[in-house]
Amino acid sequence: MTTMTEKFRILGQYIKDMSSETKDTETYIFVKDSISKYQLNININSKPLKNKMVEINTILKFEDKEETNKHKSHFEMTYATIIKVDDSVKEKKELERIILCDVQIKIYPNIEKSFLNMLHNSGYGNVKFEK
Image 1: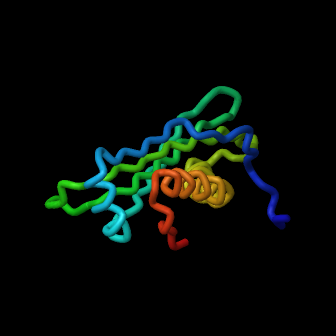
Image 2: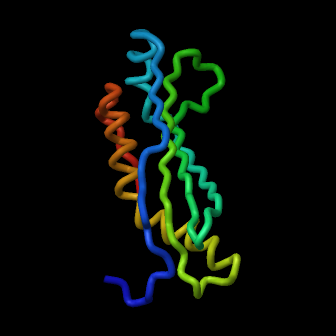
């Protein structure tokens, strides 16, 4: 599939935490009309495990940045990926690229599908993300 040899292997991936909060009907109706203004923020953190393994947490938050809106829904998901890094990876920069770019590209379809399913199942069926 890829020409370069991959310097990591995904051992597992799962939804660690998922949260969808819409406190009442009034909020739901308001958010249904204004959800296109919501912004997606992505944070990535990682922690080393033993045997050249790394746990990567990709945290998605979809929220209304407008301070004045009192009707807001909150959507958040933490997606965990466990990888085993090849012994040839020695440089910190190379490891950062694997964690922040290579792994994210590989897991993105799963993350997007899971997060959109949560939003759709929360009653917001018209939400889509631009790549």
